[in-house]
Image (cartoon, rainbow, N blue to C red; front, top):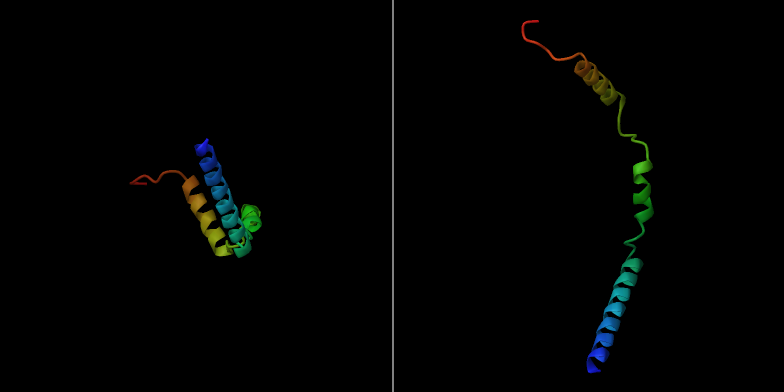
Length: 72
């Protein structure tokens, strides 16, 4: 019977410690950027300029031309 009292005391201590840790992280603002991070993959890539697009087009044209043989 004494072990049950000890187990209840230990489990309540762990629950209280977990709640204190959770609320301290909540007050510090660790969870504020969660919504922004979840929407990040849906944003358009605006970092690609025209010069990078031209380079990609020329690389894809060269790749579709086929293999280059020596002697041609």
